[in-house]
Image 1 (cartoon, rainbow, N blue to C red):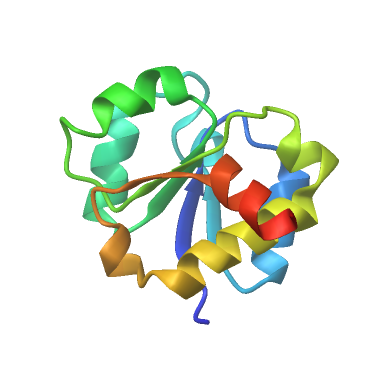
Image 2: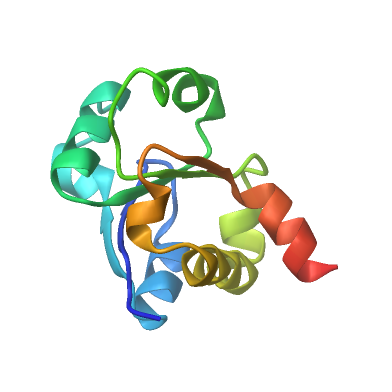
Length: 122
């Protein structure tokens, strides 16, 4: 698996970022690139322009925005504590998504990491 380009939404912690990087992904934090309280539509545009998949737990906004904007893919998780309580498990789940789908196949797709996590950890 070649590491994917990933942008972590502003609320995703540093431990999960480090674990993804250790697994070979090219990971950046939205808060480092754009500061706090970044416009969600702007994140999707940047991700599209830079072929970068977004990881977020902001389902409230991204579930509706994803159909309205071209993007490189959105991986959503609904358990806000998961990146902190099981960063390795969530990172393995992200790896599995990228193992099953080429990055290009994720374009304009919304993936529920929680479903994948549950499947992968059963």
